[in-house]
Each structure stands twice: as structure tokens, then as C-alpha cells.
Amino acid sequence: MTAYALANVRSVELCPDIVEYLERIQATMDPFGGRFAFHGGEKEVVEGSWAQDLILIEFPDLESVRGWWTSPEYQAIKHLRTDHMAADIVLFDTLPKDYQVGETAAKLATLL
Image 1 (cartoon, helix red, strand yellow):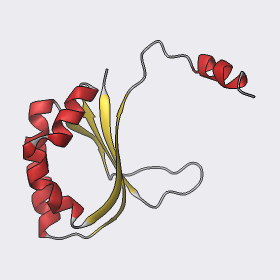
Image 2 (tube, one colour):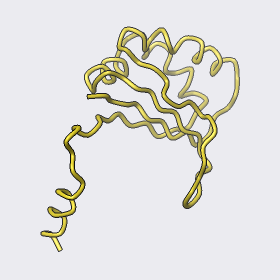
Image 3 (spheres, helix red, strand yellow):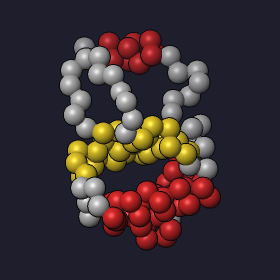
């Protein structure tokens, strides 16, 4: 199942380190099948507010996204980002194709 690395970017200092990070990150993702699905582009806020930037990187599966995140190649450039960016980052798997939200609702209803 497809898996993702999602970053909620609260702030970023644009500087040469960030540019270098962007120049080098794809090479760290390629061996794991990673690709940017969304990278701080246009978004339409339809409810509430959203002041942050969003980055979504897609991988073939959770093992691949975890492998990329912990790889020596990514760890070697990670500081270029973390020294200049405040972000919340999560790794997650997609739901099975047969997932039914009604089943979740039924389970929750038993807790009420």
C-alpha cells in the first residue's frame, strides 16, 4: 500500500542550506521510490484556517518511507533542513482498499 511522509511546515528560513537540501533530497528518495506529491503549492482552505505550508512525499509502502527516513543518505542532509525549518513530520500508510468508514462508526458507537 502507498505510504507517505507528511510535513506541516510552520516556518522556514530561506537560505543556501535550504536550497542545497532541495537540490539533494531527490537523490535520497530515488532508491526508495519516493516522489513529491505536494510541495508547498497552492491550496484552497475551505474550512478553518491554514497558515502553514504542506509537503507530501509518496512512497510505494511504509517500509520504503521508513527506509528513506532512516537512510544514511537522508540523515547526511537532514540538518540542512532542521537547522532552518520548524515542522511536524509524520510517516503513515494508506488504508486498505476495502476500508469502510461505517465499520469505524459502528465500533465508536459501542463506546458511547
